[in-house]
Image (cartoon, rainbow, N blue to C red; front, side, top):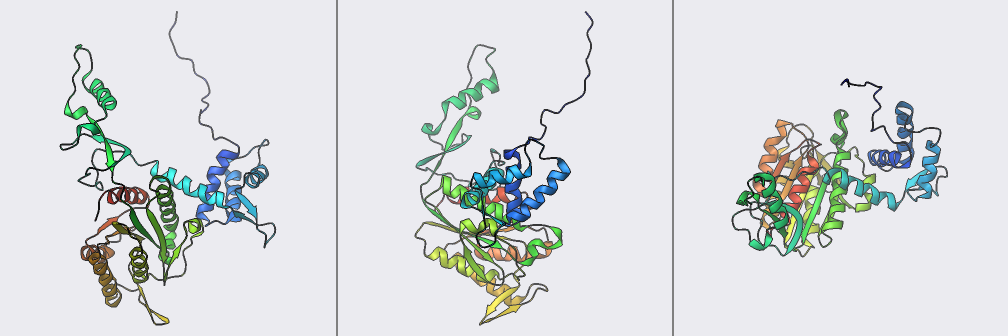
Amino acid sequence: MAVGFRFRDFVPEDQPEKGFESLFKLFMQLVTITSGDVGEALSWLNELDKQYGLTDDNYGMGNFIDDLKKKGYIDENEQQKGEFKITPKTEQGIRKSALEEIFGKLKKSSTGNHRTPHTGQGDEQSTDLREFRFGDSLESIQMTESIRNAQLNHGMDSGEFMLTEGDLEVRENEHKSQTSTVLMIDISHSMILYGEDRITPAKKVAMALAELVKQKYPKDFLDVIVFGNDAWQIEIKDLPYLQVGPYHTNTVAGLELAMDLLRKRKTPNKQIFMITDGKPTCLKEGTGYYKNSFGLDRKVVNKTLNLAAAARRVKIPITTFMITSDPYLQKFVEEFTEVNQGKAYYSGLKGLGHLVFEDYKKNRRKTL
């Protein structure tokens, strides 16, 4: 019998699915980018349909819009007939989608730049497993996983079972202490300059963090504020609608509001996360504004550094996530971080979610 190969036309198994679910995933991404504008999101979806054939004769865009209404994801705007708005169900769905997109991609590793060096003896088991370290209690060793590792690492060919320290895995313990976090998001005009959309990744991280806190750490507090010329608090449900404005960067106003919010929280752990891409350029003076976008204005910088020091005195660390690689700004961020004794990360947009989540998980394990 001859041995050979039979060739045929290649048909990919992962052909794009057509129907509500595939369109809905795209819609949720687009409605986030368009800051909750359903009409604009649907227009973009129509253009994608023309280019990539997302629908067919059995299920078209009209069917999708009808299903969105029937399933309670969009409502017709009562004030302007013919226009749609997203519902609270969609707002929650966007947060869950962001959580899955960002948190789902985080990979476990034995070591990392942002894990706490001392786990401590917690009183609440988490779902995370890690390698055994000197000082871990015997009760925390997970025998099933450890025996499996031993079989994979040493085999059973000799008929003898071997278990070494390197095979052992333990389950992490976390303290039940509450943490209060204020997440500051820069909405100055530079967040969309030079053709780079920086506000959408910042929104997604905020929504994912909010959903994580709600699901996994319901006793924790998370407040979100935005800052441009001024600073103000926003509700979690308002995050999908967040937009950049024609603003300068009043970091001082943001920090003042963040510290005011944290003073009201009676929790042992307090922290500020600040997502920004630029230097402070604005101060509020009476009813007006002091602005200078050219270079690092010493008047603005000094007041910002004074607040960093004030936060340190009341044991509120500030972690700055700088989503730009501009070396000119690094000197200011380094000085700000040193004064506060906090941390700073210079992150690309793709790495932002990983850094925020790792730091949040680490910081809530210790009492500052």
